[in-house]
Length: 388
Length: 126
Image (cartoon, rainbow over all chains, first blue to last red; front, side, top):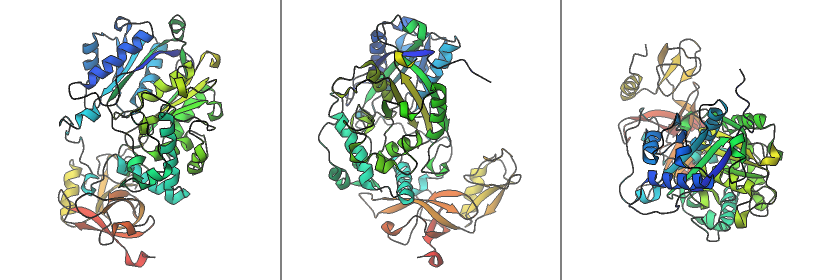
């Protein structure tokens, strides 16, 4: 069965963040999602009245699309509340393109908000019962970090990856963050700082872990034809792919290989492109090991070579492959489900709007989302007009 | 017979001192955690088995809480062909290595009742 021809059929026409960082105790996740939505629609020259497709995920809110539609006064004819963790929004982009290409909707709004940082100080963390009995909880893993720590330990054992390799990832992210005025932490960071920071769940230390911030984001998507008439240069979805293999880390078959191998293969095939065509990479770096695993699984280096690949500043400003040019979840912003921010940064890089961190001549950007415990993997390949 | 409440069956067997897992009657895959359907072939006929408890550490992370001693979280590949999350006890947490041979038993010290824990298998110590 062949689906609708998706390559270039839909385009991102508006992106925005909400307030980021720490917004304080009197604000709510849905407000941040709505704030970002308003800004993204304004940038697109559209309003809430134009939105007929709504895509939304908010942690802890089982009916987030209903909450969001009511709040915005949107009455969508197509709704998608896919919740696969932090990769949800890259998945939403894929689904939005499918819906637009098939005529199910015309203007899709993807929205996210979280007050994870402010919540921690006011007892608003949700502690609902698990849906299934846990066969992990009795061993007191500190999730999610222990899941990623187990993957890192196995990668180190199998391929000789070192804590210094992991630290290279954190330092590269920080160097990018220093070029981004919106980044939450912008102090200088050295390899030694990372190695010296407190170990949380070995081999991962505090500085191997993402931030906990507040923040929201929104992405507006429409068909290629309508996109041409809107104010900003369209950023086309050239390829998208999804894959997941497990939910809990103890069910992941090989902790050194993620389903990003499959999601990226699908995205590259649709885009008729390969890793060598990609100018900038925006991937979900919840922990330093993620960047290494995903650069391997997305095809930028061979399996096991990720540690050497990220060394010597190769993914940092001035390096051969710009990765997470906003500073990533490690240094820019991480409200819990980061996957909308790679889309926003990829769009800005293609438009040439990334300020002091703008890379020259960006035509193709790859955005990759991760959800759960290395569980859900979703890859999107975006391009400017020249890529069509 | 799996019955209709596999988690209850699991905890009952654990309380009796077993290291329980399921096997699929059709494809013979080892199945863990307990289910009502085989995740390999989709069959709904699963039988309970008792593991010999011997396995190999697949990965390990050491956690050092502010209160209390450091402890390990491990993934162990049991020889029967299934993987569990657990902890290795009776040796310093920092000494637990990937690839170590370990032996499981039911420990009574879990935060929520009996749980399977592992000790380093003397014959496999190297």
